[in-house]
Length: 537
Image (cartoon, rainbow, N blue to C red):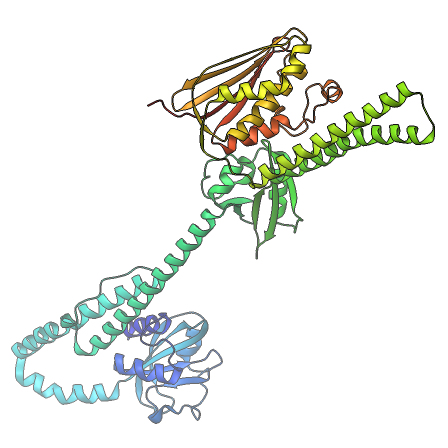
């Protein structure tokens, strides 16, 4: 009775077992068949839910069992086996009852065994036992022990398998040939249940791995925090943005993040709904968005907006610089034109005003042309042609266009090197023209400009060297930016647009090369760029 009661409770509480989803009356009949005992399922209020001993399973007319001794003790949480007369038949019986939980609902399972048939059977056998004698009794005892040994071992193995399966393990079931016939259906039902559980666990594991791969593959940083601000998940992007190694599970966020404002924001996000906020960390601009979880904790995403902020600054600087550069010649032209319209100045003054208007209009035209060139380069609308070009020859052609100005200021040029590059000849001409124009603008009278072409492996390095005033080291990294000038007043006074070096950089890059500036204040400047080299045959 005790073993049967334990097995009945296990079968009722097992998820996915042979009784899963069965109605109480059906479950009672199935348990009675398996255990070969009368099984009654009783609700906590004493109402009979199912009884294997009721014909047709109709228990609606059965009396409330809440007053039965074994039911009262089972409602108090005890498992009990006792002997008493049946309240229905008056026959002496054994009753065993225990509490159970099925699909989240409590109930009482009771087993019953009438003793009167057993007593009658024992009395009928008493004479036979006397006649058989001591040897017969001994032989019968040995036979019964041998017969019961196999089923008892099978039941114990099934019970152990049920317990291990309830704990989440995958136990090994006995072979059906080792079990008694009445236990084979139970073993097969357990095998099916184990297969379903294993399939479901595998599916959950695959889904979990897919989610982890997805989280790790996104570019945004993601941190999942527990309700006490401990990190229980962090993807690689978040670790890179915060410059961290992947932390141990449930490490406090305060031990990982040193930035006080960021640390406070992460800790508060687990208890309060916070709006998006931007932090600057190690030169990076990070935009944080958080979402609280139920019942506690939060998921925080990190978006690196450094490039966006840099582009916004470039745009603001470009608008401000372009507006200033356009305003200066337009203001001068307007002022001189209004002066000419308002009166009749002397011829010398009139000529000077018109010359200033012409000079500013040329400067304005050059500025617009440079802006258009730079716009085409940055938009990718220009593609460099691949030609075999001698940079020294192109440099001589570009210098010839400025030679008159150079002679007036006694500036000498020297161009050396006969190597051949793979480049766009027109673009290379414009590069030299911009670099020579800059060199003349910043080289004093009597100075010099030198061009050197030198092979460096698969590349060709071209250096334009002037003997001008040089560039301070503090501003050298920025001279290729649009409109940037180390000496803004002098450059504007000499007619520069501030776009020449930016155009040079884009053209050299488009031809597969790179450009850099080398200079010391008072020692001249070298602009060096590299292009693919055509190896001599």
